[in-house]
Amino acid sequence: MPAYRNRTVTLAALALAAWSGIADAQWVFLARRAVGRIEQMSQQAPDGKTAFDTATVIVDVPAARVYETVQESLKAAAGITITSDDGPTRRVAFTDGTRSASIQSISLGDRLTQILVSSAHAAGADATTSTIVARIVGVCRRMNVECTPGS
Image 1 (spheres, rainbow, N blue to C red):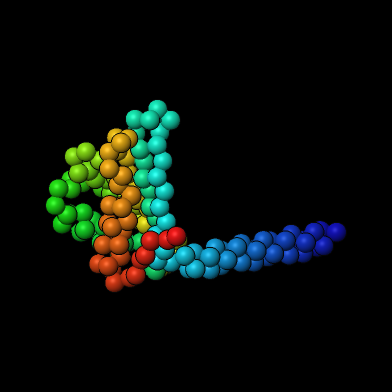
Image 2: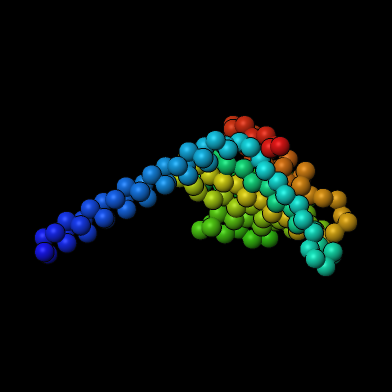
């Protein structure tokens, strides 16, 4: 009986390992279909005083390179002040004096990275979505990859 149980446990472990590899491969396949398409969203806080803008894109570039390019881009931008820079999470927060934003480079694999940008500003002020998308396009251009706004 113990030999039968050992085989069953071994087969179950192998099946689970194979299944997790298949799930990871499917995730990467889906992410690759979205490479270069910038998606965006805006919303207002329930109190009506603050608005939030978010945009994201997946690029076929290692996360470390994306993070370095974001840092260089922000340092070169006129009127932008970096308020925090967290290397381990690859997140850079910055402000132009009236709006705050942050950019994070999230590794999805060896060469697949999600760039996530979020911004907060006073409601009624100019929406920052177009600025966020322009910044993402600029970062993509610096890395020689094509990024275009989604539908």
